[in-house]
Length: 122
Image (cartoon, rainbow, N blue to C red; front, side, top):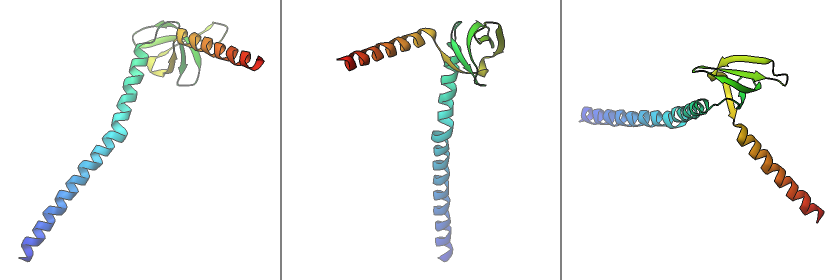
């Protein structure tokens, strides 16, 4: 009788151990793997939507403008003198900003600033 109860408690502890392992794997998936895959998809979409004339920031922190695109590489122009053109991999691009988006944001900011100035004058 003692042997039967010890084997039953062993089976219960084995079942609870399996449940904890499944819970831990699920936590790792939802906290680590899934967000990383979402970020990779977002980065891949950003890189595939790049176009000539877009402003970019490289992983090294340099700001430039794309002047040519191939399948795996881009040529980025850095600086104001327009003579510094560097070919680099698309994976070296950290951020992309569309020129029409940037200009519309600055226009919105200017109109907001003008409205605030007019309100202050009144």
